[in-house]
Length: 355
Image (cartoon, rainbow, N blue to C red; front, side, top):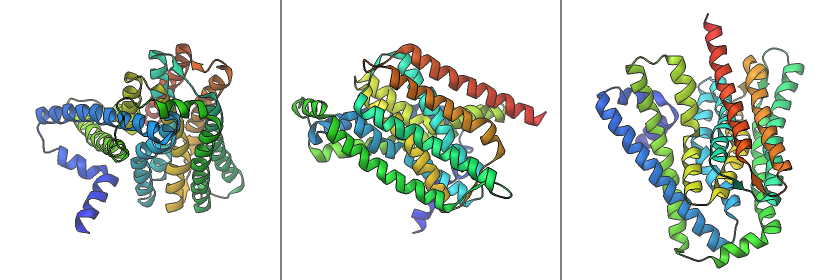
């Protein structure tokens, strides 16, 4: 039990890892970062290979596996950190972890990937999961506005909100599987008959789960190591917080996206981004609110919630207008541009608060 407690403490509280990394010389930290980057790339490769073969063996489209299994794996650390943050009395971190990851996943990761290549989409599944994506975020903002208007004192997302979101999460996972069975017979037939280089089912799961663990663990070590180097060379704390933290929360999704596109399976990336957005809202924020009621800071109403809805509804608009089932590069440019503007304004507001 003592060892388990230490592991959970290490995962939930980054200060323990930071204290450990502070003991290393700078050259050793660069070595740690290099190892983490190589591990991230290898873990992503293993996971994508496992997903492709899992799709062949189960008949499920790759976009569905990306939207469920992969998204659950990449958002699990964020959910754990948000629950720990809520318990430790930091609701801004718990809520910001979910909202900020939605913005980064859609604007940074999908936007950049879409700018690099034309991305195909499964309209039947993406039309439906896309509505869940924007619907869950709209529900979150709607409830937050309702408690702001009707609740006396500070607006709070109560435990019943967290329980509701977790129940909706179960419904989302079930409906995604149902939609896959109803609307993707052609894709499923193609997956089943493409048995080139297929491996055993057990090995598929081992590669998926093992790849996820490598990605999450490497990202967990890389970001604090990079932050420590940045502080040693004189980078301001505000810049570190606005870049390293945002980058770190989306690093698993980013590596998954790069590996999926590089291996010719961009539909896994699309499914992962949409699924991660839904899970960041229903799972990450839901689990945190169920653990302890979350106070909604004022800047979320003025800045973070509008930015999240803008980028999600823009993504939804692109899904609706792409009648030929392809995302265009310029659409990725728009999403990435909104994300860059969000970062600039966030940094400007933070600096303004300190003047």
